[in-house]
Every structure is written in structure tokens, then in C-alpha cells.
Length: 231
Image (cartoon, rainbow, N blue to C red; front, side, top):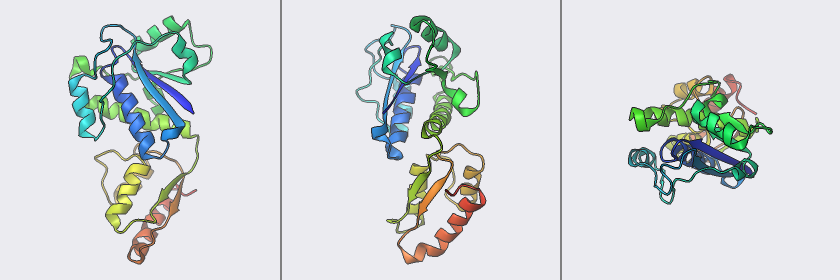
């Protein structure tokens, strides 16, 4: 099991959002048992408080509950307890390094480093009031983190129970962690496979059993093949 700890200043906006987003991603991709995911604060300002209401509403709008999540401050013991400790900005990184006395095992990272954006911070929506941008950045970062932890293992997309095209796209939305604004068509699938953030690099496709979907599945499989995405 891989143990991941997200950290921000107060543990009421960014880090609990990251925790809950990644838990949801693990559930959607069938990896719940492979991760232990938590979050904490660098400060003691919000200890015991629930997720900040606008953050709760943003999570809820994507079907993610924050019930039962309360702010806690990270401790020195967390360094040994977790495999990865991930901050949201340089201030978080400074406090982690200071409290842990360095990073001898290379566990501490900035979230967006995983997405090829070294040094880019996730702005604190407590100050910006822009929870949508925070959501977007956290989603990109968490998908990139999931890919890094997946270590190139092929992702299986099982379409065998699909009865229609909508079912096929639903399987891909969950299995590939599509963003809400990604279209449900083959052109969009090509764009996703060739550049937009998504989970997985190579895929094993299990075809639908429904005969009426055979022709469509053939076209879909060709998109994966042309993108170099078949395992």
C-alpha cells in the first residue's frame, strides 16, 4: 500500500480537496485498496475545523463528500508514516523541510511537479476565492501523481457489460479520469490520448458483448491504436 499525505497551510481548502479528489480517483480506477491517503496542515489555525464551505461545495458539485474530514496539523512522525508528502506551495515546502529536519528519503514534493510544472504553486483559494482554478490544478496534479504511481502499468478498460455508446464513454470517463469538460466523441478521445490530462499510458480494451456495438468499438480501438496507446 502506498501512503500519501497532502499538506497545505490550514487543511481546510487545498490539501483536503487533494486528499478527497485522489481518493475518488482511486475508487473510480479500482485502486482503493492500493492507497492510504490523508491530508494535514502546517499551521494550528484551523485545527478541528471541517472543510471550508466553498471547498465543500466545489467537491460536492463533482459528487465528492467531505463529511468527516477535520483539520489536523502534521507531525514529525508523519515523515516515517507516509511514502509521499506533497505540498501545494513553496511556503508549505519550507515548513515541511524545517519540521522534518530535511528530506533524507526524497519523500517531499510539490504536487504540480508531477505534472511537469516544477515550481508552479496551487494558489490558496482562501485568498483568491477562485475555487474552480484550484479544482482544475488539483485534478491535473492528482492525475499526474496517479500516473507516476502507476509506473506505466497498462490500464484495463472493460466494455463487456456496455449496452450502448453512453456506457462505453462512462467506462472511459472513470477508467481514464476524464475532466468534466471532455467531450464524448471519438475526436475528443483522440485529443485526450494525444495531449489532454488523463490516467494511463497504455490500455487493454475488453470489447463489448453487444453485437450492435462491434462496429463502433472497432472505430474506438483504431483511435487508441493510432495514438500508440494500446498495450
